[in-house]
Image (cartoon, rainbow, N blue to C red):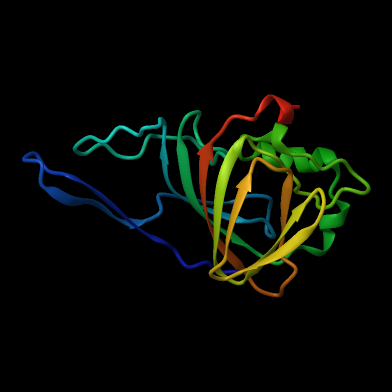
Amino acid sequence: MEYAPFRRIVTGHDQTGQAIIQQDGPAPRVQQIGGDHGPVFHEIWNTRATPAPIDAASGEPAEDGIQLAPPKGGTRIRVLDIPPDADNLDAITPEQARAHFAQIGAADAASHSGEGSRHAHMHRTETIDYGIVLEGEIVLLLDEGETTVRAGEIVIQRGTNHGWANRSDRNCRIVFILIDGAFDDSLKG
C-alpha cells in the first residue's frame, strides 16, 4: 500500500533574529513496523524538555530509529498510517507482541496477555496522547469498552491500556502528539 508523504515545515531565525523557514520537505524518518501489515510511522518532531528551549536555528534533537514514547520531559508528534487489521492478528502471541513493541523501544508497554486479550497490540505508556484522525476510521479499544473514531475526531488518551483496531477496508491516517507524563501512585504498576 502506498502512503502519501508529509511536508514538514520548520521555522527558525536568521543571524539577525528574523523569522525564516529553516526546513521544508518530507518527514525525515519514515518506517513501517511489524511487517507488511504493520503501521507506517512518519516521525515529524520531538522535544527533550518542557519548556522546550527555543534558539535561533537548531534542528530536531537526533534520535536513532523510531521510539514509541516521547523523550523524558519532552514531546513527540508523528503521523501513523494504520492499514486494515491483518487476518492473522488473533494468532499473535504475547512474546510476538512484546517483540513488535521492542521495535519501537517499548517492549515493556505491551500488555497482550494471550487468550482473552482485547487486541494483540494492547499497550500502555506513561503519556498523554492527543490523536487526531485525518482519514479513515479506527477503533479505540480499552480494558472496558471501545469506540470508533472517524476523520475529524480527536482522542485524548491518558495513560490508559489501549489498542487500535482498523476493522475497515482502508487505511487510517492519524496524527499523534505525545506528551511525557507521570502516573499517579494509584495507577502505577
